[in-house]
Length: 112
Length: 78
Length: 256
Image 1 (cartoon, rainbow over the protein chains, first blue to last red):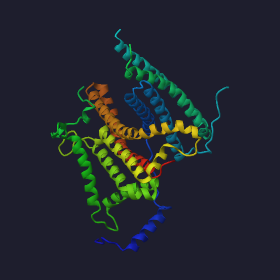
Image 2: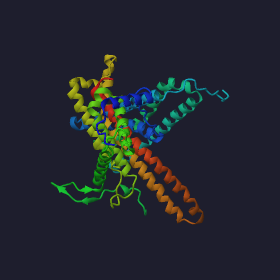
Image 3: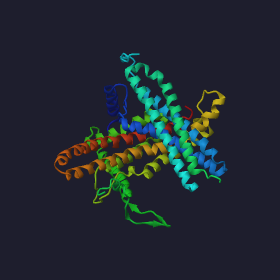
Image 4: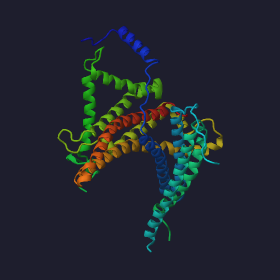
């Protein structure tokens, strides 16, 4: 077939029909992440923030000769940033994968 | 003992604290998961508490990391 | 150890080049990267050659990949972002995907040690820094000083900004590191694991009667992990491209 330039209305028609067949537009569903890469992602996000915070603090120390306070404060800031990163990630993840609110809860079988 | 080598040994010992903090974090997440498996619908409500506990526990580990980093990278005056 | 699992990542110069005292040799990593780019270009060129209304198989794959990434960029960055950044993101995705895939085929063009270039942190780091600088340049060029809003989420008590802004700054600067490490660690760890477990097979097979029989177990494991690695190769390219979109979205719309 040598129809290099198909007529525009035919393409539009096809696009409309494809969109109809697919439902509302072309929906892209991200592939499921493996648990290992998810764990790596959380840990990497947390660790990277700490490392970068400590490095920035160390750099400040190096230029301002304020050792060891820059390192300390940078480490604490990096820690806080890491937690912020992880919380942001976890929130995004749990909104993308909501818990079934009708899920049955198990009775506590401990004797207390 | 040579103060330089004492510094490195001290930094290594300080890192033990991070491992112990790891135990604590594992306890927190393990208990959260076993609770969440029992009552999944209540789990999202406890997310704040989970993060708070994680932050408090991990902060102690970060303190020991700070001690180790200071021992390693801050020149000491004798 | 007879089969060093790290040896697969060794970089060997193929054509030694030295520029002003710096070692700029064409190595097997360079070859793998060139092969990744070349394969992607060749495939798309060949697949889209007919440009038929009713596509053949290769064209379906090419158009599917295009549509998939186009949809993702559109979803995360909106109409404006897709116009500006789609070529960039699609190029990154294809390059990473082809590089990952190259690592799955041992030996290539008669070169014994071709590996996934993405298992070198310098490669992923360079790409992550490229994305990071793009975000900063585009952010400042488009929004001016308003881009600094990315560090200050709106709707907080004024005193809170004292704490939040430094945290956000550190969080912003930690992005290229976690961006690079995620891709690198996934690919590196996957290939390392393959090699280590594959190394068990001859060791156990030479170990005597019972061990020889048991050496089937790591063999099956290697095959299973190999299948998983194909998934990881695609998934990590997708995740890298998606995070690039998320970061680029910040450049277009600072202040979340």
